Amino acid sequence: MRTSKEGFVFIYEKIKNHPVFKNNSTRKQLPISHQLALTLECLGSVGKFVQNFQVGQGTVIGITRRVIEAINYYESYYIKWPNHNRRREIYQVMKEEGFEGCIGFIDGTTFPLYQKPAWQGEVFFNRKKNYSLNAQILCDCDKNVTAITTGWPGSCADSMVYRNMGLFNNPDRFFDKGQFLLADSAYPLNDHLIPAIWAPAANSHINTDFNFCLAKSRVQNEHAIGILKGQWASLIEMRLQLHGKDDIVQYVNWIKACCILHNMLSQLKDSWAELSEE
Image (cartoon, rainbow, N blue to C red; front, side, top):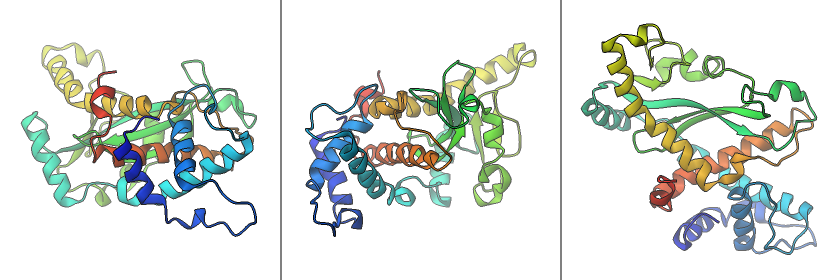
């Protein structure tokens, strides 16, 4: 369980009154603290099921879904696009790095699946020769996740998923004039996104210097994703079933819960120092 005692208590206090824990059946739920501990163990474990709790697999599934639902209640509180004032703060930080107008970063990542999905398995097969979901993760200069889009098959290109996001199709809702994101060369250049420069143009001296500076700033996003997967290691090999389109929702809920916890614990600076070095 990749959190401190203080972090655990903080999460518990947030979720303990959620109606999902109000049981009207004759079968009592485990104490909420036990359900939370089991769920955090599941979210933070890779390639194995929980071994330290004497409960069956079906019970574990029910518990994790309840706790994830309670955590995801706070999505709009913890995964939120920076408001005007926060964008100005990020703007000032990035101005000092030479990217005046930058308010964040976008990067694609994949969340591997432990087996081929029973539903349309081929479309989840990616260029790294495994089955996965694609995710677009945006973060700020403090490594907080500001937006995430996931649920797309791993075979989808980052640029294609980006073109289906609201910030591409309705940029006025997200950016003030002159504001933009930094990205790698997989993304298209536009008024609100500046990617690294492709070769052969990248080979010129001035463009090489530009790409170096961009990569130095954009590494914040790579670090954020690394911390996310380091703390919530289930994202390294997701062990949910995928038998139909509706099951994608369970994956999305799982991933979003991890991102909410990432931001929630970042406010406490919980476990970040050692994870950022891994």
